[in-house]
Length: 126
Image 1 (cartoon, rainbow, N blue to C red):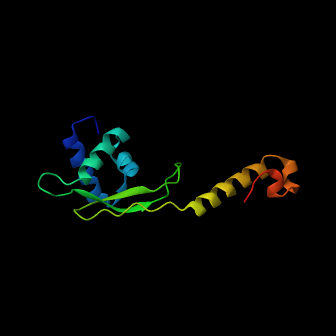
Image 2 (cartoon, helix red, strand yellow):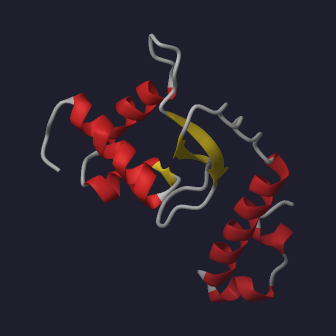
Image 3 (cartoon, rainbow, N blue to C red):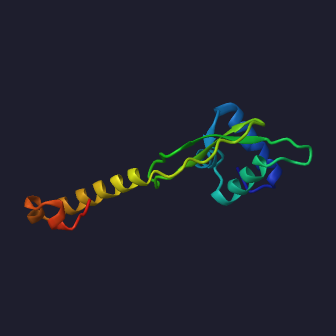
């Protein structure tokens, strides 16, 4: 898709969502072949009610997975005029657990003499 006006982007997003089903912003970008700046603004505007009181898309759910990306909630958009699902609250205990597991794996694996030490001796406090 070449650079066009917002009307063409809106139409393209509606077509992709109706044919492919619910998708995240990055999946929509990949499908249309456009950048984040062009799609994000349009999705935000499509999610709001227009002058006639109708929304074009809504947030159906939230997902945490994204290939090669950070782990945070990403909105999954679908066509319709339904209420958006609320963003999930952060799981502080789960985040800490994943952080410490990654740190533990890196520190233990990067130096052969760390293999015999405890986590506290290496500097990982749980």
